Amino acid sequence: MADITLLDGSIGQELVKRSGDQPTPLWSTQVMMDRPDLVGDVHADYFRRGATVATTNTYALHRSRLRRIGMEDKLASLVDAALSQAERACVGSEGQIAGALGPVLASYRPDLKPDPDEAAARFSELVQLMADRVDLFLIETVSSVLEGEGALRGTANCGKPVWLAVSVNDEDGTRLRSGERLADIQPLIARFDVAAVLINCSKPEAIPAALDVIALMGRPFGAYANGFSHIADAFLTEAPTVDVLEQRHDLGPAAYAAHAMQWVAQGATIVGGCCEVGPDHIETLARALRDAGHRIVPGARDGCDLKAR
Image 1 (cartoon, rainbow, N blue to C red):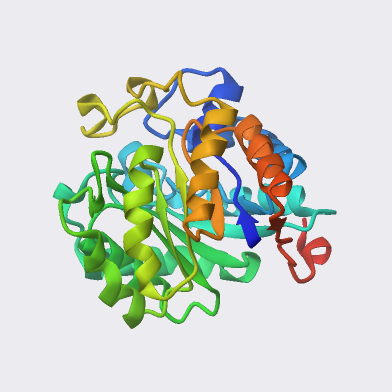
Image 2: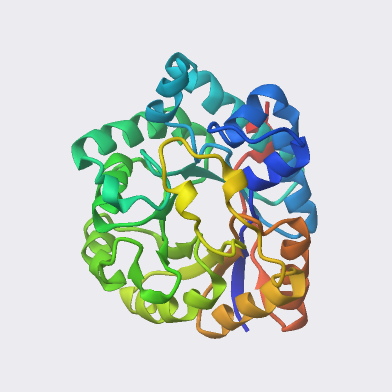
């Protein structure tokens, strides 16, 4: 039996669904601007269902995205709003807060080849805004070695554990979405002393092959998959909206939990959900873990109540 860190599930997609509003290129950032308390409600729901980590609604908060709509000057206030809502949900829980750091330019777009120097500066700015109020940083949906380098350079010496989550080819879990071998990220893991290596925002069927690779990297490892049928070409364009992505109808809570339990059997100690994996999925997974004799590890956040605003 193992000690398992249970992440939350989808934040952005869950917010868009609960808002009922028409999706925009700002994704969950727009929901947070219009209905900030909804963000805290989603975090609190995941805690109630068994998760012990709140992933901040900061995945899409980058100057490059806000600049398109003339809101670049709102970056700091939006980061503060996301952190405040995570802190609010954390009060009275045993949870911890993971500062989410998404791709600088776009998800699933390794072809854009972000400059590592520029990316490092962008990530470093976010780290400075968040470091005092999070327990760890979670770099998400890294689709190439180049993307990983920029993000890790930006989080270097941040004083908090850094978890790196990469997205793999849905048909071949041994390769990043760039086509590079997943094993090619290992030098970055060692160079930047990454605290945990994860696979995220990929089909659950691709995860087992990916775990076989990252299990050899000498770090705690795990996964949190998405529930998309596929990544539509229409999403791989400039400023897309999430309504072009189709949710799977064969990946309910029980089916998802079965996938995640397989990952645990492979040695994963960090599991959760990504896009289209919601609170019901996390609750079912929590129950499956406990029924199998595993222990869901509390976040053990220092001074959570004192930090809450």
